[in-house]
Amino acid sequence: MITKIYIFPLLFIIFNLLIVFNYKYLTKKLNIIDFPIEKRKIHKYPTPLFGGIIIFFNFLLFFTILLIFDYQHLLETFLLTETKALIYFFIIANLIFCLGLYDDKYNIRAIYRILIIGFLVFCSIFVDSTLEINYLKFTFFNHVLNIDKASLLFPLLCFVVLIISCNMSDGINLQSFLFNFVNFLAIYIIKENLLALMILISLIFFCFLNIKGKIFLGDSGSYFLSFLMGFFFIKYCNYGYGINAEQTFLFLIFPVLDATRCIIMRLIKGKNILSSDNIHLHYLLLKHIGYLKTIIILGVIYIIPLISYVLNLNTLLVLIIIIFLYSTLLIKYQS
Image 1 (cartoon, one colour):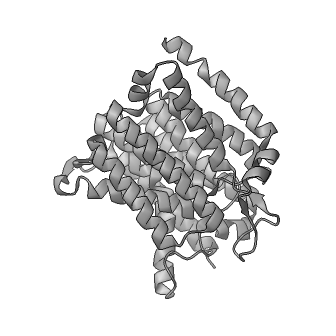
Image 2 (image 1 turned 120 degrees about the vertical axis):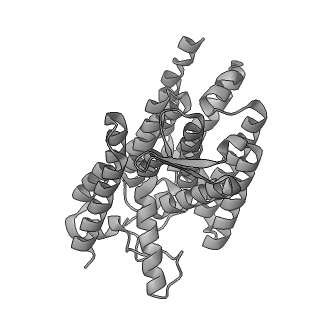
Image 3 (image 1 turned 90 degrees about the vertical axis):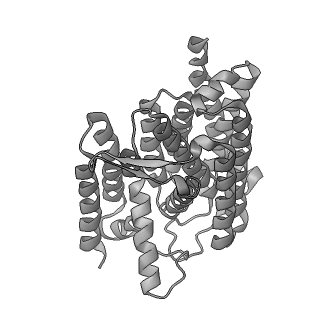
């Protein structure tokens, strides 16, 4: 049975080829376009926000195939979720995607966006207790931090911060692809997860169009992928699948670090902390060293946590390296 399941990647490759060859027709029908009317936007032509739809179509196909072939138990295995909670997960994941799609089309106010994301994530944690976080284990301090009293609030905060940070850090072609690809590759490596593999395949096809500037990921893709990413990392930590809290923190730190700095800078300048601007690191790098070097630098930073995990390096040392690289780039190019 498992052998038959792994024929599915071939089906997904064919499915994504069909999408790529028909993306112009599909984007015309959906008519969700990013127009370069804001000063901070760097693209010159109206561009479809179609990337998230590609990812989501693959997600729906994955669920549909496993249900049609009566492989429901494999859904439970890949998602580490019991049947009842699995239904809620599917509904909430769909709603998060739809929220992003609506945001792409109509541009929801940031505060409403955060409140809706927070509510949906709260529902997800409330119906699935395995998403609660009761303690944090830090190996470099040899200490376990008990957070029983915040077991629901803490993962809620983590999810919301991750989703918003990833959305804020998606500014240039390939940036979101690189970050998501590295992290879902890690999710697949940690525990051979077929859904993660399907997402990797869809990301490769998204990359093919994104590298040419033909489509963007959009809020729908950013929200959806960030939610899935947080979901898997928390599950893996809670189930003890070879990754701990500090390693997870390394994988996710970069967009959170950059978003936190930008929020602090806006506070200092008296601006709305959720406003859009061009003070993110990727914009600074792009301005001073060009697109290619910017993507190479970001790619190197994104892949450091994966190398650290595979080689079992000291997480505190790797954390210091990432913060040092980020600070050095900032000091050099912020002017």
